[in-house]
Length: 126
Image (cartoon, rainbow, N blue to C red; front, side):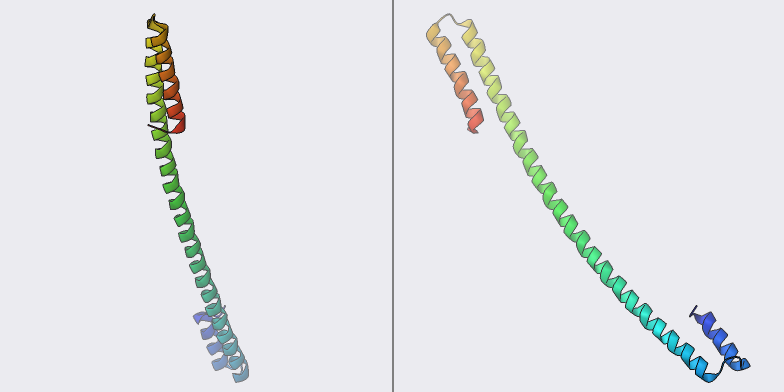
């Protein structure tokens, strides 16, 4: 209890003779020590706050990088899916043509086209 109230209490004791000057000096020294300890504690807390702020900033930066990477990955796979979808539509058309033709040569051409479209899609060619 080293507060204004404590100082007032010490002053009252000193005035009333309950506490002598040496005891009062010791109490003041204790108060100064407490003030130093509180200042050291406040400094430590300020350093901890700074460390935490830095850690939060680092974490935010990592999160932003991961989010950007996720967006790029999403865009890449979205394009891949669209490319595969288009290739499958072409293959479906070619195989449908192959079913309807009576000519073996033409049927083989449609099947070869289907195989080519599949290979191109798997290789990433457009």
